[in-house]
Length: 318
Image (tube, rainbow, N blue to C red; front, side, top):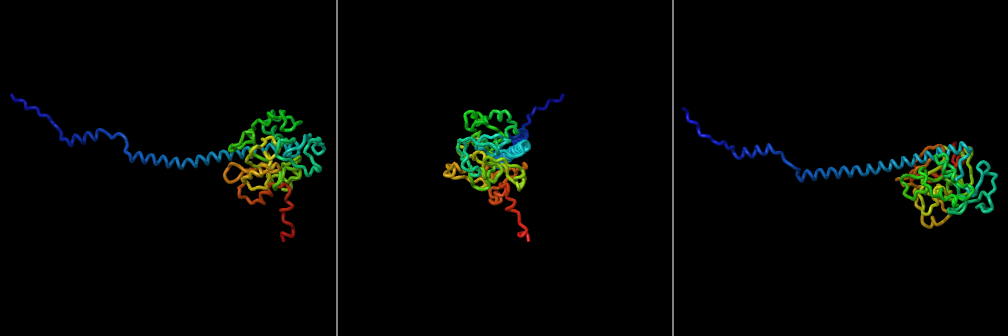
């Protein structure tokens, strides 16, 4: 009988045990260097994306603003088709649309000794129904249009609800002024001038411009443009500098306090968009005008009948 051999315990070398344990147990967590690298990458991506997001928001606002101008231009065309003329920029008295030339103003109107010299100031006194109220039926606001008391001043108590109503199509998304202000204005004159009956734009005082009176053509003449609201403006339904501007000032120029205190001062175009302002011509084409545009060129785009002044004569062409 063979005797059993004594039992011996096998003990691996300590270095082998350490290596096996290391192989079996993966590392947990990350190093400080890895954390720093990840944080830096995230910060770089954020720095790159913020301007992109800001530009996208601005492009969206500008696109929506241009759509508003196109819609207003289409409303102008619809109005012109119905009435055979553009709406008056503003009015100094109540008159029946079809018989405006024959209508006699009331004694308390703003008419002076000569109709051609008539002008208005930007204060809540007068009739002042404007082009914006005329377009209401063509921008899905028929109910609001029917609520207007056309026999009274736009500042009368009977028209208070109209003045306090915000109409989205008259507002640019980038406009930060009070909701009842208008972001768009009709061009009443090519130079700095009060809003009057002798202006040379498309929308001015007591005037219904017909297409045959526009020597340059609707496609070459600015109808509406963006504007920055001034303090104490009278709202979107007031035919003052609240909804009318001229081309006598560079785009985006900021008036001085003494100018704003002058009730005859009207002002020019401007916007919250970088570098210029959008305008729409009579045919509905929207153009973004740079604030560095040549001023005489800008003024010629506003004047409705300057073709005879700008076209070369037979002598000039020789």
